[in-house]
Image (cartoon, rainbow, N blue to C red):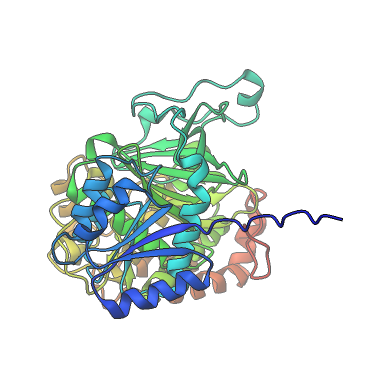
Length: 483
């Protein structure tokens, strides 16, 4: 009886590795071979270019700093023949400044890896890019429509499921936060590996779309840099900073980043979808909030700020528009990290001025030239809490100079002028947050969190809870199950 011939073993996926350091190249080659890949090695870009153009692999991993032809030039030359869908490129370098990463993406890289890297980090990037290869290489998918186009209007039945929010044109020009979503539309275009189905909101930096990941239908928020900023190096650096900051955080009160990249000439950031409203919209719609509800919101904001401070980070744009309350359970998320920076980082990316929407929340010491730190974020918490309790800004004005003058030397705001009967304990917390002298202010977010929780448990807080209308959602507890 004749035996059937054995099935041929599948051909290993071919990866081109371009690295001038023999030690680094050998290490990466051995790692990839152990994972089942066929690796072709080259010592520099010039040696790799002709071979890759003649017979493109599934993926190219290239160092940037090399003799003869560096990784940036190699990537640019490859992009003349193959787009990122047909030939993914990962650039690797010890260069970690934002302008270096920007240069890598502008050259056409799919991703950027900073040395020294963990092996798991390299393999995760390789795995994702290869897994995405099938649908990223399709040439028939429609491209992202112009920024001015809005998603198609949904059917009346879908619109009736949620109250109609303000149109995108009414959003402040400096807002890019995920906010109360527009009614969902039918899927109508693709972006990278995501199906865009609607829109959360628009702002000065770009648009946040409602989307789903195609391979598993996970709902996401897709933030895409505005077209007019796609060649603005400062704007791109700010966008990449936001990606870097969010990627470094793991806290339930900060919106999680899931993915990022560059597609159709646009930089994008993918975040968890938070179905809820921004605090500014809640107050605009419902009026000043009950005291207990306000305390629950802001202890969560301060927990987020403490988690940031523990990583050496300052948010620098705390305001009601960047505080999202999840509709399902009241969990509060801090969003929009385009201005965030490390406390001791030297940078001039965002220090040349403030948009009007941010001016109301700048701490007096920052206006006078001091560097932002966690205490200046807490001053912004105080301004936001004042607004939430009263529906009024404590330092009103129409131009930044007028606002700044009132913050630095104007009369001390009194919330009871706009809302009588506020609880003395809550007013003490608010007053300390709004101290002009940062030394007299709360020093850490966890101190505010502690005092607000203590007030909620006090007789005064319990009385305020009993007197208020039923809360929209219960206070989140540590054992709650989260997304």
